[in-house]
Image 1: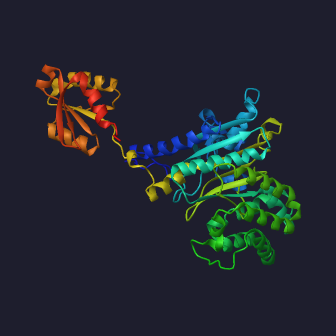
Image 2 (image 1 turned 30 degrees about the horizontal axis):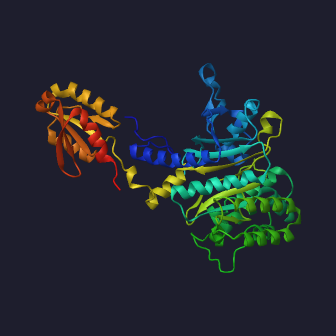
Image 3 (image 1 turned 135 degrees about the horizontal axis):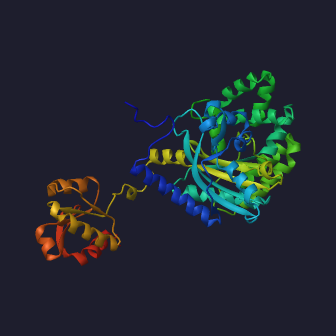
Amino acid sequence: MPGTAPPSGMRDFLPEDVRRREHVIGIIKRVYERYGFEPLETPAAENLETLLGKYGEEGNKLIFKILKRGEHEATGQADLALRYDLTVPLARVVAQHQAKLPRPFKRYQIQPVWRADRPGRGRFREFYQCDVDALGSTSPVVEAELCGAVAEAMTELGFSDFVIRINHRQLLTSMLESKGIEIEASEHVATLVTLDKLDKVGREGVEKELEGHGRSRAAVKALMDLFAPPPPSARTTSRAIDGLRNAYAPSTPAVIRQALDGLLNVVPKGGSAIANLHEILALAEQTNAKGRITFDRSLARGLSYYTGAIMEVNVDGIGSLGGGGRYDNLVGMFSGQQIPACGFSLGLERILVVMTERGMFPASLATSPADVMVATFDASGAGPAMRLADRLRSAGLRVMVYPDPDKIGKQIKYADGRRIPFVAILGDDEITAGTVTVKNLAAQTQQTYDQAAAGPAIREALTPRG
């Protein structure tokens, strides 16, 4: 017998799951559209060469490759791959269709991506990303609007304890150089990928990995003291990872300015990046992100294509629910023409896990498949039941016809178990008279209507009063 479970790290979504997903996606989509972003979709599969080399060495290992097909299957070679994220496909689309697209081009995309990662809590091999990107402008207005859109989406989903952390890849590069890390891009990317694990494995885990790259303990300590200086009161626990949770609290603009200017004294080569952060933060204060932002020098973001400001949204005690940043060089890899770009991605699966655990979904989502179920006494009533159902649907109702001539008690029990609020009962007398008896399961009352009047009566009963 074949197994019935889906592949590891992938899931089936039952009706209640789908309703919750659609609820979250609907809110995020509406917020994105308020900011002038347009929808875009791309294929699940990309040419392998499109994806390779865009995510760093670790990312390359997580790409789901698709073997050649047909007569080429025996070669064991791959030419396609499932998309790893939505950003690289976007860059390909812009390079392919740039003559048709406006500039700036603002798009959102909500689709699944695939990574050959180790499954865990809120971590899957197939998952949805909710991306929003703007291409064609280097203005800090872009980053500020992204922060505003993300803050608005998080608030409308019901989160109140989130913060948007911000940093800058050029500032990180200057910090690495100040500690003697060589300028080679591969060296920087490898170090930043390791630093990006700080809130997952803690300072000790990052230090151990950096030492494994051949660095001396003294050099690693100096690097860590610059990137993640623990506050004096920090306690190393599983929840307060080397005091980093202190960095997840929003900061006032004055505190952020002080932190940035203080870092400028330590890393003078980071001046242009710090100036850019000042601009972004000042503009973000005019959006829904006001009071939600903090500067965090330990934020690294492991993907190799980032070139400027980087951002991450974190929830207290949970961690990251999404992130992004500026990637001005990515489109040029496909077109040979540099097109500035910046984006943010919210992780749908992580959001759903947290909202489920916290009981954040509205009670109305625990809904039924229908407003009314039509029940009959025997098989001869099937035709009249279908005609009545059609009439009720024309009145704007969701209608289910119980297909089998079971006892009325069993049919009513089924409707009650599915939270269907009304049962329309068609017996011989009702069919002859052109009427229907409507039973309100919650109120335990029933009333007989002319069939033409039943739909409006049920609709009125379903309408909330007040």
